[in-house]
Length: 464
Image (cartoon, rainbow, N blue to C red; front, side, top):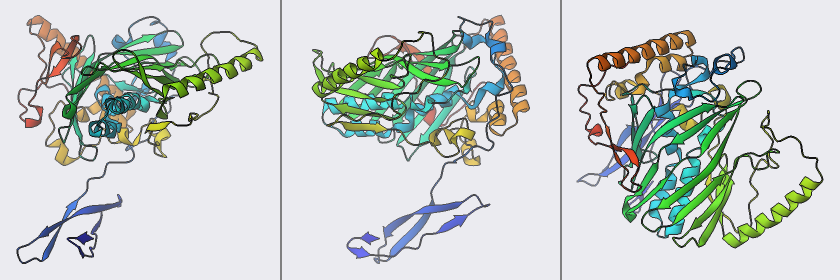
């Protein structure tokens, strides 16, 4: 180690505990009055890389027997068997928006408004990337349930709360540990069953504030659809338009998440433009929400699209067109990877999933750590934190029967509490969020009330 132009050799201390692996530490260097050097050892916290138990096979269970009476209905009121869940609450699933927080930090460091918008657009696309192949349903949060996550390594902390049960609304508030950003919103995941597929429309506005630039960006997420609910392999697509607005400059980024189409040519594709307030195109964006996002000059992109369309029409004329019904199997795209147009700049690339992901509900490394709980954390978090939910914990530990029993018990407890409130004409009071207009769009939103991190938790509801 070089310190003040002097070289020092440092012996790293290593701990091995219960065969769980090697834990290295940070070394702190300080200068004493007599100019001797003092080294202090601090442990580094590592996040877990697997769940306690692999996922159960769903092959022996038919979701059709439950859903056949629900075609066209809102699914939030339907009780599903626990086997179709993954061991996370929807509040934890929401937190996966933050996996690529480095894109927000990068946006804050840039001086160009267009470059900042590029990073914000990449963050908005990356926020849905973890849904790829995640066909397990997260547990519905109980009214008053909360979740917190502090990631010093990623530079943020987040709080979320289930603020409404019917309709189910989850509110969240994240902030940069260096006070460089605030990211907040509320989500009402409206689910509908359409025969062969389940569609999730995530109603609600995302708001990102870059504090150093006094800028605010807002957008809504695309629609997610899970196909082959009745038979065959489940597969997921995202579709719809996402419009990101910079409320300070008037710039917009309009992204189109493409539906797969009959032959799968558009599967997972995302493309669009950043434009100024007079709608002049400043740059083009393209990629796949499962892989990456690039930016390129608009003229170059349009020339490529024109040539690509010409080639596609030639191919189409040589093929016989089949029926136009929804495909039963996931269509294979022409190419697994995105063709990189010359002159493009890479904005974001997905982090590869761990080797054991398929056995762990197709979780990312980030998702794998969301429900971990240690004694120190347990002594700090409020009793409403979903890490303490017994049904989710049982499922994570591979105790499927206990998970099912606990899920039924908690749902019945919630129904009883709601009946008791209606008898006494008592209204439910949210703890950490309140309703109000979004400061930038004016639409109804749930806003953070403050004081959560003071750790002064009193009069919290007994929901578990």
